Length: 251
Image (cartoon, rainbow, N blue to C red):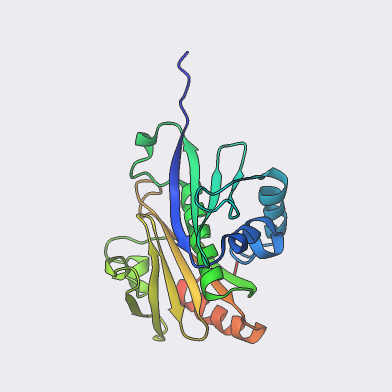
C-alpha cells in the first residue's frame, strides 16, 4: 500500500503593522478574535472557542536576532499552522500553512479552506491596521450565481474592472441603485479580492469567487463586509444599500 505524503503549503505570508504581541492576542483571546474571524452568525462564538481555545495548540521559540521577542505559533491536529514572527517595533509577519496531499495537485485549484484562511488573515490585518481596538459588525452575501458572460454579477455590481487595478490603486464603481462606490484595493489573489471601502464608514469588502469549473454553470460569488465602530443606525443604512447591491439579506 502506498502511503499518501502530506506536505505543508504556505497559503498566507503577510506583514502586519502591529506588534507581534498584539497580533498574538488576536489569535488567543476570543473577544479579539471576533474582530476579524468569520462573520456574524449565531454560532460564531462557539466556533471561535472550538477552533482557537479547544483545538489549537500554542507554542513559541526564541527569535534568532532578538531572543526576547519569541516566534509564536498555533497548530492543529489536522496540520494547519499559523506563525507570528516579530519584524521590528510595530510590525510583525504572519504566515499560515496547511497540509495537502501532494502540492502539485493543488496548483490553480480553489480550496475552500485555503480561501477562508486567506480572507480571514486579510480581515485580521485590516482590523489591526485600520481599526485597532474597535468591534466589528458584518454583512454577508453567500454563494450567489456569478452569472453568464453577458450578465456577470460583478459587472452588475459595478466591479467589472477590479481585477485590473494594482494593489493600493483606486476603485471607483457605481451600485445598481446609482450610488457611488469608492475604495482602495486591499489585497488580490487568484480567487478573491479585498477592497477598503470609503464612504459612510471605512470598511473591508472581501469578494471570493468559485470558478464555473467547480460550480457549473457560472460559478459563485460570496461577499463579506466588515464594519468597525458603527452604531445601529449606520449599520441599518449600510444594510439597506447592501441588500440593493447584492440582493442578499444580512448573515
